[in-house]
Length: 514
Image (tube, rainbow, N blue to C red; front, side, top):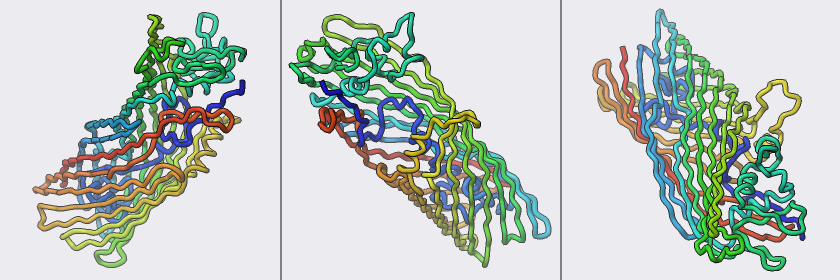
């Protein structure tokens, strides 16, 4: 019998159970979608040349030097996401609403004889992960479990036995889900292969043919939480109200929680009489936590009245991350055999990510006290991101393959942001903004477009700003597992579905100026 090969799907946009640390982890924690204050968000975060807002300090540290007063600010927010999927001609919809905090800050300044110093400390949100997604459909053309069987080919079956004498989770080379499937009787060896080739409980044999004998109901569910935020310590210098300079020490907090469930169930168990297969469920969860540190520098210059030029640069963020993950699997058979659910041990791994340099420039024009128009351009070379071992002096880098994927699959991305503020009177403001974030991937994904509207109110020392941000809908194709080939011959083609997602945020800033 020809050895069967499993090829991870070329169109798989999210892979079930990402147990290993991948290039896409590096991309996830390198991307920034600023939130910060409601005023900054309302203007599309086009704040490089404007300053004077705490949200601007994570974009251009010179923004603190523009402050002529002391300010306290706090910004709670609501984050919502909506997903629609079309998979195997079946539609599913999911939505999620989660509260959060995108900004807390304090800034003060001292001025004398054309010279000023400012100091700021606080927190700004940089990225937020809220997601809920599901897909369901019926097929007899392929199976996640059958794909897993091909992936397991070449591993000696007895090495996956889990008993008092051996622990294949800790001491074996098989994927953990293969160990789970083998020990729940969802995989079996093919006769005459020496215990090295496998078939799934969702497959049947007829002579030399192996096939899916009936319809399988496939169900997938994913739930994601998390955020990346930056605690900053800032100092700024004001020279003659013409040149403003600033610097940040940034400390990032990273938290990401991913949970998914996948199941396959026989629509007609009698069709699977050879194996008595009825159904199985696979659970997977992964949590990433960590910290990062960076330095930022910026400048704002007023060459003539009302015109502002700004520029900022950020060093790489040097991250130290800790991953934990766990899988479980249970199976049901129509002959009454129902093995207990099996859980893997808790997997743990420590590693580092160095994000790329980031630079931005901005141009703004102010209409006296009546408003401002601002435009920013920002660029990040995502192909320069690095994944590294936890030990700084390790002799080998276990992420050489991932770093190759980063260099070949990612690219420089330019972000364009624009904002407008109108002040009909000293108590009321209207704002609007737009941000375009270029896709950092060469071959997958799409650009991100965000629109925003906001209002502001002033009453003595108190102020409040309210902003609505909308990320426009994006549609991408996905597969839940990969295609299976025997040499160049396609055996099973994984179904391809489509996902349309969007999200919105509502930010409310409350503050005091004195």
